[in-house]
Length: 187
Image (tube, rainbow, N blue to C red; front, side, top):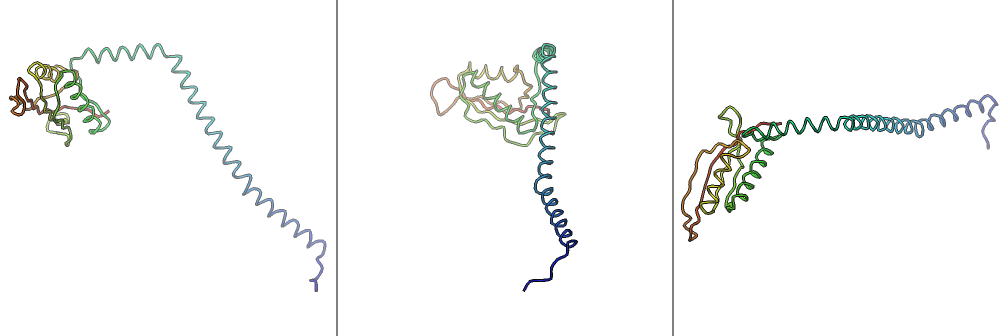
């Protein structure tokens, strides 16, 4: 029981239809992904060429850029005090915490509490980060710390200062608590 025989015209039509379907599948499964890959590769090559051109420009201008950076750094260092800077208030607070800990280490005093967690104070012209430092040290260390807070590279405003003998420790150690605020700018 076989079906009616197909004419030559019908066989050609079926063959052409199968060839068209095969061609469409080839385009969808092979050619289109290849074209997407090719375009992505060309994009990467274009980006790398642009990057190489920028790097060559930087290399060509290296001495000029180095001189400009040195001049800018020198101008900043010659200014008496600068504001804290950070992309966000949290990063500026982190920089303040690091600065205060460095001052304490250089002054050879022991920090018992360093609190810079708090919302920036915006009562002044610039927003400022509040901070509280409690430390224990001798009179020389406390004096050095206060000098660094007052004359250091960053602008710090002392709001409250308490110095008293440390009742828990015998000897000539003092306990200092200073509450301050550090104006900052966002970069």
